[in-house]
Length: 373
Image 1 (cartoon, helix red, strand yellow):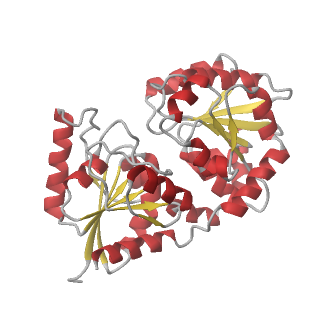
Image 2 (spheres, rainbow, N blue to C red):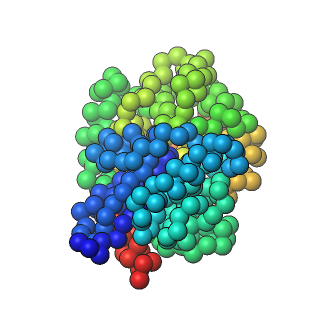
Image 3 (cartoon, rainbow, N blue to C red):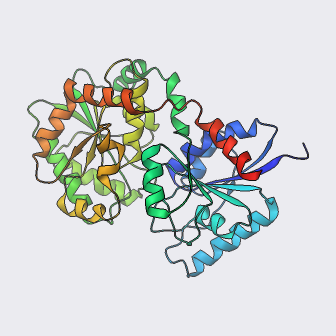
C-alpha cells in the first residue's frame, strides 16, 4: 500500500524487547504499517528467538555522550533513519548510565518519537532529547513521568503480559520442578540484575543467602541471571550464594516465565520480573507467587532512593509485592513471604489492581496513527 506508515521499533534491554515484540508482530500484520526493527544485544537475541528480524547494531553502548563510541552510535542512527525514512520511531526503555541505539535514534530523528516505557517514570536521557510521547503502563507511571520529565503520556497498558493469559501455570510449575528434581520443598529464587557496580548489591546477595540458610524448614534455592549480567558477574553471584547455600540451581538458559513459575517466592532488588510475577498471579486461578523487592541493604536502599520513588511504585503502593526494607529480620520477612498468607495477599492485590493487558498492543498502534494525523 502506498500510504503505509513506516515505524522503526528499537530495543537494547531485555525488557524492551519483550515489551516491543507483541507490538512488532501485530503491526507487521497490519496493512497500514511498514515495520523496521533495530536492535542491540541482549534485545537482538531475544527478538531473534521470536522470529523477528532486526537491523543488528554491533556498536557497544556508550559511557560518555561526547565520546567516540557515542559519535559512532549517532552516526549509525542517522544512517538507519536516512535509509528507512520512518514516520515514527518507537524506542524501548534502556537502563540509565549508558547510551545505546534507542537513545541515538530518538536524538537523531526528524519524525515523531515515542518511548515504550516498561518501568514507572523512567527515561534514559543519555543524549538529552525527550520523546514526543511516553507510552506508559498505568496511572502511576503517567503521574511519575509527568512529574519527573514534564512530558505527555498515554496509558496503553502492559504489552508483554497479554500472552500470559494462555499460560497453564500449574502444568508449567510441575514440569519446571520435575526438571530440577524438586519434590515437596518450597522454592525461593534470586533474580539477578546488572547492579554489581552499585554499593551494597553484593552485600544484598550475601544477606539474602544467609537469610534463606536460616529458614526453619528446607527450601530449594534458584538463581536466574539477568541477560545483561556478564559471565564474571554471574560467577560472583553464584559464589556469594554458595557460601551459605551450596546447592543453588542455576537457571541461566531458562525462559523467564518458566523460572518465575518454578518459584513460590521471587526475589529481586527492583526488577521487571517482579511485575511479571504479579501478572502471573493476575492470570492464575489461585495464589501462585510472592514477589519480594529486596531493599534490605541500607547502603543500596540509600543509593537507589535518590533515583527510584519506591513508595509510588505499584509494588509498594498497591501491594503487588512484599518489600524487604533495612532494619528488619530478612529471614523472617522471606519466610513469611513464602507462606500461603503472603502469596494470597499478593494474588488478591494483582486481581484488584492490575489491568487486563489484552488491548495494549492495539492501543499503541492507535496512538501511532493519532500522532501522524
